[in-house]
Length: 338
Image (tube, rainbow, N blue to C red; front, top):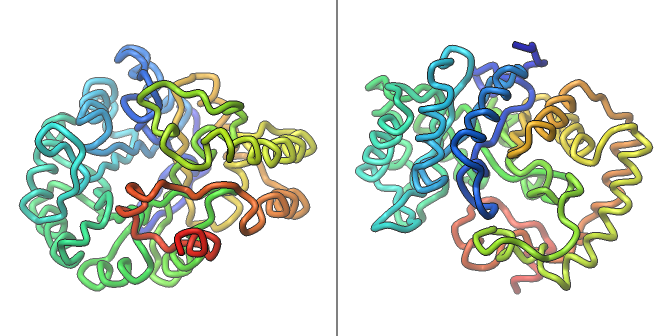
């Protein structure tokens, strides 16, 4: 196994780059075979990745089952993170932050994963019908029962993080973060620094866009980018001009666009751990290599000069998805919603 640089997220120490496992079962069109998914997961561990991130929702439980079958025999080599609240309810995606639902989801996750303990367990989204204190209370009881270790929150605002942290210390907050999604900079990164909470950045290569993998608005039927405003035909044409500039900065820095995006995220704060996902062994190798890249101040400034406020066309989510997001909006998103 390769040894990667490590970072602390709360009391946990993990590889500076983790692996988001979602797209092995979910979200970006036809998933790979179970055999190919298992091969990638084991290769990630061989490369020294020690943080695997999944959720009950991914593949309607299939992603947890994949991890359980593929790598649980190497359990001592990685920190296992999963999520609740978003789950399969009556056969389809649903949101339920009640303590009863959290307990049910967790017990199902443990069975699917083939383990009796999840190291880091997140509330995947805020169920606005349930006080966050009640949802966190369910996690506290699960921790006391030995079913989980650390507590996490995903896509939640600074105010919600403070409320949750007052019930029990939060170890990690997970939110989308990359050069073209900067919502965490409004308040969440600051509250994480203040409270000693680690920040886990999902989609750090912008759902493939900043990996130079999206050049036209043509996706498979079950690809979630079909429903994301930034990837529609009219907005993508504008955004591809930004990608041209980003690609040039990567070339000048002697790295790939994906590596530039990951190294940029790593450079923001020492308590940030990105978790890019991929189905490609070669791309996984490429991503992991970014952990050893140090960008110059000039390169970071060049990236920031591309993605100035309002530069990207299209909001992060369409209104139905945004309704489940508690993270603060950027000023330009507030203006677009007005």
